[in-house]
Image 1 (tube, one colour):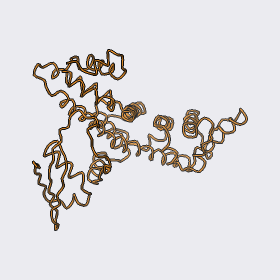
Image 2 (cartoon, one colour):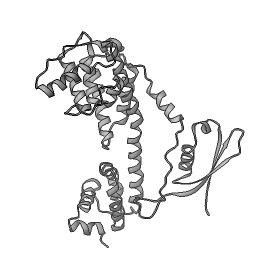
Image 3 (cartoon, one colour):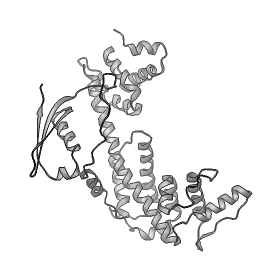
Image 4 (cartoon, helix red, strand yellow):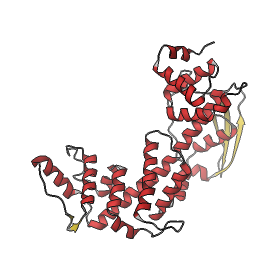
Length: 342
């Protein structure tokens, strides 16, 4: 029996051609027709890059003669990769937020004003209106380099638009301005202000090596590029190294990444409640969900019972904990899970 997706591939259906390429280049094998159809149905709603890399991991498995559960294995690898990428988001959020805020304070301290960008905004508007305008040589009577002015004006254009008519910056604070700026503008502004900023940072890194502008910029750029990859849904490789670099840079401004991540994890924020009942039309590589009952015991309270679907008993416990509030987690004394065979 031939796969329906391969039949469509012969008819030049675009998504079928993509599947054919994935099987040929990434998996380097042709699974049974029914398995190809499962993968083909899942593919249009997936991240193609993660799917490609997941198939590469399964090359050896796919070539076994007794291989009968490729979609199930692919399901596990793909969603593991998805979870790995998702684990970077809190790290990148903490890093980005901290440095945007820190730079806002640095700029305010340096120029003794909260609205250090206004002279450049006025210059750009005059230039747009008259076709000419004098360069800004100082902010609040404090001299600036040509590079600093260039970066501030690029930042303004990226926030206000080429026509400078969005009205965002007229009444904004420095924190609001830098929260809207591109991370590349944040990086360049730190670079241009390095002569001042370096005095506010330790002179050495955690490993004792000297901290200079080139070292800082190289590390900052590496985290920023990983951030761009993650935010554009591309797989970030060497995640542990990226996390280590982010941790190192955050330590320079007295932010302890591991503690921040622990505090986030312990907050026990519940995920959004689904309003959509799962149906056969929803794409999936494998069902793999079993009904479980989980009893949660709390201090000075009757046990609470949850009924949920999970892949295993351990997964059922993890899902039940995720459903608890932070306060309920602190009062938890025991968890019991039972497979519901009804």
